[in-house]
Length: 222
Image (cartoon, rainbow, N blue to C red):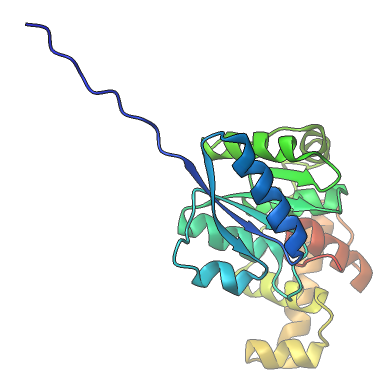
């Protein structure tokens, strides 16, 4: 007697779309829904906090705007999504190497400029849902500029001091936030800059430090 096995039907990929322009969110969701590609948009949000508090979070994939109207760095967001078990596609009107590198270093698996078509975004969603990096031309070019030796070996406090200082805070403000003295903060920043200098990266000015912070995902470009 032949035994038949029941073939499991793969479930749809659940997706969250987060952008502070409602027309963008609704437009992407409508395009995905019309294509019937096994992708279901279950979250449409305009804010980071709205995403995290939504009852359907976490989703399989989150499509996240690089520049939401908040002060939270993209690196922080992507790491939080990864910790929650959702894979990230970052989209932005900025397609410069620094923006892409910051998102990818933090753990995003795809970067899609808003100048691309909705079909490009759908391809990225399907790829990252399988845990794979979506290598479009923008991502490939940005990754080619990343040196694998660019790890200065910062301590936790050095990293935090540099990130806070790069965000525009004064030494006094950084010291207050870290609960330490101004002299200690100066020491952290000086040591951090020296470690970067040792690997051939000059962060001797606040402008250079800020650019690096954006590239690393510490900060969100304005």
